Length: 305
Image (cartoon, rainbow, N blue to C red; front, side, top):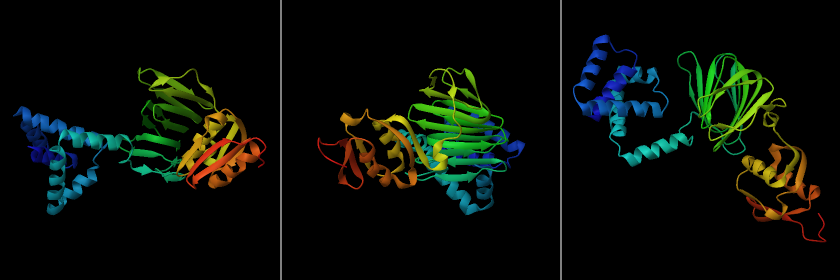
């Protein structure tokens, strides 16, 4: 059953199916309830991966050996137990199967066609779909800056963003999200399906798909595009949490110094230098378990930097 569903999936997904073949597939689906269930499971599999490009089906149909391999692989996936499907779905949602990813401290710039450029900040995962004349992205986690001169949409855990042409800054941290519009106009739709417009120079925030207050003023493009972390009377624990996105290992903040305030512009390419500078800026000291396990705590009374 799974192999038959896989065969129809590959054939109809190739873009070369005839009207008779489409009708035959409809007849096969209608002939037995198990056929329809197998077909629907196949459709869920394709939606899990966002798309199966037509070129994949065309190439496989053109080579008998590759076609057999594809059918066998799809059939195995369709026949997989529920636990395997749950694991696969979890891997996709977490971004492990994303088209574009960056590691800790890594940034990346990708051209997505004429007039369209995507920049990924540290720890980011994005899936792409460029079908139907509209660029569609899914931001699984992290932060992006999108310059698009054509219609596009971006899906996030907290909602969907649409625009005809705009420069957008998006960030997704678990249930929290942020959208800033540097140029153009964008529309955000949250969990309640209401649409909110966001004009150039504005930013909005959401939590679990619910808008958090009115739009705020956006002060230009994000600082990470210039490789810096800017702090304006920022709490030390918030500063260290942000800095930890750009360096491997564990960076802890002792609760006794968490509320200290810090201001300045810091070069993200040199996170060790940033940490070493903290005792000169605040009454703190660094404690090293290893070079990658650091705690920022209070400086003992009478100690000097």
